[in-house]
Length: 148
Length: 103
Image (cartoon, rainbow over all chains, first blue to last red; front, side, top):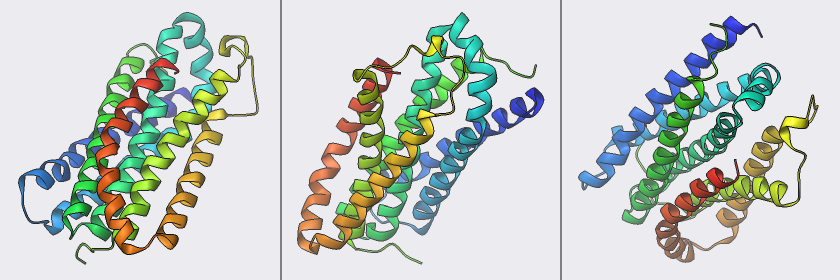
């Protein structure tokens, strides 16, 4: 992968993740503020889970290039930043897994109050992991600007 | 299509999310505690631990979800769905902490 393509895909990856996190706020908020479950709450949770998984999949695609081209220099010059990248990867996986679980719980058990509570807890967990991932991503990207 | 009321699928999905996340972080901790080569000393490697961890965590989460979805009766699933819901956010907080302690 060329450095320019890497930089382009990396930005798309980040923007899709931010969009997913913004969308995830809809079910997180409406599951707490509304007594009844609306179809759009279910749909936005599914779309957010899909987008988060998509962002994770793009990150998966970029990872071999990062490992070969970016990580060695980052590890040599700024080991704490390289460590932050690893933490970001761990939390990104947790965010995607929890978001998928939350969306499935909401779809298949959301008509019951225990199902809605379980979905809310999972989606909030995904959102917290996702926001932490995003913050770490911005931090790492400010040091590792490949392709520029 | 509206939301359903199936607590067994709900419990299975919850356990997939929690199980896969816990498995991923546990694998990372296990490789750290088992002793690993310093990353800065590795020039090149075929093995990509991140891919293996993700694959294994998804597999274990799915196995857990299928076993629970098939074997747990509906009443028990409803009870456990409520109990495990209370554990989700504390577990997530611990996992986040661990990923910072062992990157």
